[in-house]
Length: 496
Image (cartoon, rainbow, N blue to C red):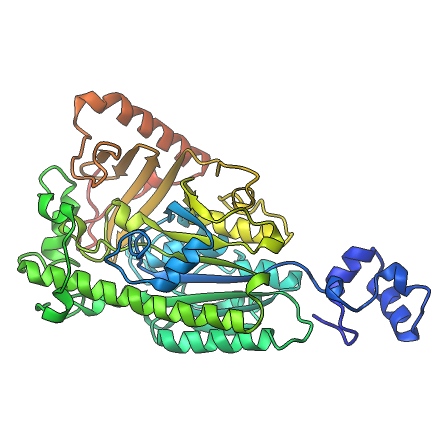
């Protein structure tokens, strides 16, 4: 809070090492001999000089869905931000689903520790609904608000009832209906812009942290994701080229769950459709990405108009990706492909906070790293959760995230429980399916992940090494993966 003499209480106490009551008494008496010792109450140095944070999360945007990566997409605002940021080219999520990934974004913990192992409301192997984020866990606002930040949460929550977690946010616009899609993205932008205008009125304010969660491009589900079969839309097929893996994928050497998904689950309305339907899907997805980019641009401009651009660290990412017709798959499901586990991540640190030169950064990250990074910049203890602060990378004092590989979790889809653990190194990816066929890809030789090498004897040693390292991670993190129960699509238990 800011008191009536315009000094940040917490910052002033830290700076001067005096009890607030002593400082307050001296101020009220107008003590001239104490004021030089206390540092005074005018000028820039009286402010809480910690950075503001703008943390933006899109929904279902894969890592290539950026114009700066693939010119097929039109994203001028994201492209401009990428050029001013440390742009992480190998950023991964803890889980390729909304609720589990968001539980990691906001607690810094993997889903098996948050308890949100699948989307809230979906069914586990015992027939029980996966519930809300436990109130015993702290979300990022619950760290920042008590430390003097003015916090705001706007948009998709998708972690069940908000409950006690609301206490971590001064401004609360949580979307909880049907996963968080009852407020339009344009309305979310307006709410964010109003908050930024309030924080930038020229008054001495505490630092702020705005968490803004959009729905797009998740609304790609409006094309073929519900009851109506998709039909070609000529305007959306213009200039659309389907990816190489669309033509090369045959499913024969892949886990059976992929073909089942297309025959009987989320992809069933696309399976036997002509190519123009698939092109329409890609074109529709592109428009949803572009709409999100437009909304982001409004908020970034509002941040600049408020005079807070150079005082704000901007973090932009997504909760998971979308198959976007790669491998003849749509939406998301029990997959380990890059399109669902790898997302955009760009972090802009203003020069006043020691930023290194903007660049593309190839170090691997997982979204559990974001919370400790924000806490680190906020001068709070950063050894929180399962991640590690990226601050040394962002300031150029290190060229290593400390990760030689990343691990991703998957649990279920509705009542279809099919647990997967993925370990991804610089060159290889191994997906351990609790039941059925596993996957192994040599990403150097096969970046499109067409050739499953799990039964290739020439890769036996690689598979064994990755399996051993994954097992060690599971043990170290007390992950119950090997004790889980899989089910069929009807929710009936199946044998390992």
